[in-house]
Length: 430
Image (cartoon, rainbow, N blue to C red; front, side, top):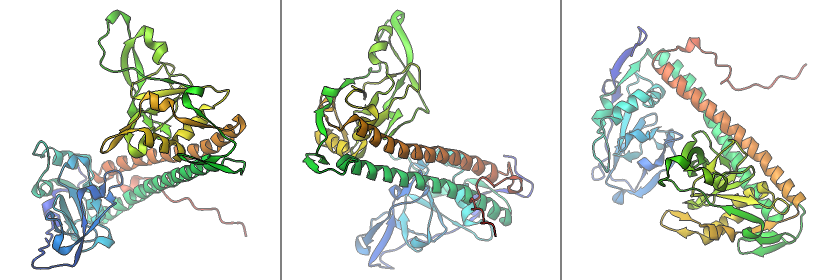
């Protein structure tokens, strides 16, 4: 790569200090705090979980002592990018031997700059290319330490890291706001489907308390359930059409992600049978326990779209049940309690079939109350979507800044940071 004249390209081995390994026999401990690879979040690039073990029964792979400011890079499946910076609270504690510990030499590289250098695409691709082992792909610490990174003067490292810290903080703030609003939505759904809006007495059901005046009908009595098209069928060329289709990956809990839409080949005569209609509530048939029956509403985002056989399309009789109200009910504690009870379960996954879905005991208040409840939850959803879109923009901005600043393609002095700077409230007039 072409670097500014004041920069160097140097291997990590020359920029880092040696680390120490814990010997439980020479330095016994009553207990250790321990971080395994699974304790590092790929999305957040930070340590999110740790374990505590009695020193005498500590895992054999727990040996490396870390310091605050170290960067840890997973050497097992490194392309998954489990990278984190050790926070002050774990100073002197232990990480798995499945991490390479990068301890910055303070005369040559700053902790934050080193942390960001380990996130560069070129760096991680070079490390990943050295993987060995089919079932347990991994690299050695020496493979990581042999990688070269751009190294500007220390003063510029501080400036670059400050900008990236600001961009990352903005992204994390938006992510936390999205998470807090999602928690608000869950609490609101639980309250609304348990108590309604009229402060009336409750009645107990198998899946929790509900307002006493609300009717309960089986889904098949107020909706139709459309199953989807299967992939991999052999069809004659003369009768086929290639159309977009909704996959399980597109159907998230409370929203649809249409970023990547794939196509499927079906018979032209089947278009009406599998076509999604505006207002269809699309639900997945399986997944993790906490995501069972996930889905939302199809809003005719595409003129023509069908759905795969692992996604149900529920079409409500709108004179009795509003699609928005049912979509939120399916997401609620009440809905998830039903799905989890009737699902076929394996060790980590659960699934439902069309028969179980049609037997869903739908709560039916008056249409006016359905509309009010749906409106309240829709307002929260729009707030969540705003945070989600802002987070996506900030993530894209961070990644662009990461590459361009860390390689010297742009310099800090060239940036306008007004969009990242915290907004200040106007001072009242004197």
